Amino acid sequence: MQGLDWLSLFVRWFHVIAGVAWIGASFYFIWLDNSLRTPPEWKQKKGIKGDLWAIHGGGFYEVAKYAYGPETMPTTLHWFKWEAYTTWLSGFALLIIVYYFGASAYLIDPSVNALTPLSAILSGLGVIFGGLAIYELACRSPLAKSPKAFAIFLITLLCFTSWLTSTLFSGRGAYIHVGALVGTIMVANVFLNIMPNQRKMVAAVANKGDIDPAWGASAKLRSVHNNYLTLPLLFIMISNHYPMTYQHPQNWLVLIAIMALSAWIRHFFNLKHQHVKKPSILITGAIGMLLLAIWVSMPVAAPSAEATADEDKKESSATVRTDADNEVAALVEKHCTSCHASEPTDDIFKVAPLGVKFDNWADIKRYAPQIYQRAAVTKDMPFLNKTGMTEEERQAIASWYQQR
Image (cartoon, rainbow, N blue to C red; front, side):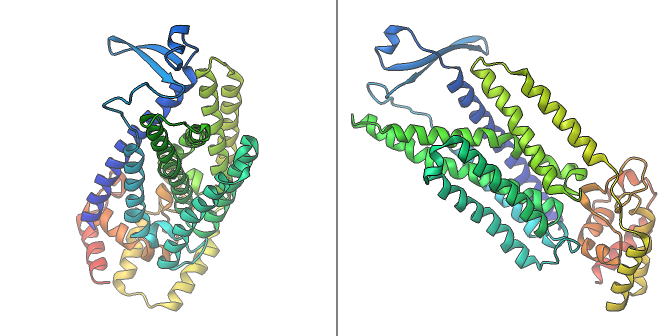
């Protein structure tokens, strides 16, 4: 169990590093392309269609973009692809480690859909790669010729995926699978379109052949898609820290709203790089976030005490609880449910952290590995040991888990 936590740490660390590199390169080249200006005539005669000057790190930089390509292929040509590939590979590995190995705790919510771990995993893979197939087919269809029509299609696809995952998985599981689909689309744009078209361009220049304008146009379209999807994806990456979003009854609508607002804010910066300033975008984006926060923060009716008691009765009638079970249930109620409940009573946590709730015995059994790990192994729970859990109580939880 602890070895898996260390593996998760290292993979997550690498994923963040690779993601920073990919996003940094992506944002830089979008900025670069939007900032190029018509060069002097002598540069145009050399085939340069846009240039710019920049200063950074104590030096001046002159950047030029050729309409066709240089007269001779340079000895060293820098490619930007492994940032994308390593981000996706590490992200998919993290999905497997956290959500597929821990499907019972983090992917499946019986109150949403009582899936088996295998069916939940297969459903998740179907969402990711099925969504990618639909997107790729649309990109290769006449729909891609109309930016507005394609934008409507992409928004519809993401809305449907958000709703579908919210009916299949836990809130966290739903959000992460929408994020996995978006990330897979973005890396597929690099692998299936941008890189092949760039290889065709390099080969054409090296062989003094003609360049098909469609190669560059198609790669540029995919780059624009990636650019607008980046901020929504970044929110999903950090969303598991904010359970008030994915635990909301309409969590899929919350996700759609935040993704839309994120893309809208990104649009402001894309226009700004072209010297088009529209502060109204920032203002409406901020108003939208404020309204969303007000809506999400509105009180939501929690399950009644009677409903919770009924759940416990059903569980008790199905299984016989031992004395150790009863002891652990009492310990969880004493030390954990002030935070981890549908309606927390803690003075700090007003929403169950990470969406983990111990409302009944079924929940305690579902999260048994996590309870054992955090209370008896790493001993970082209860948070700051606010409730004063003793070593004897931690040992009781360890003994219960090991004898299950």
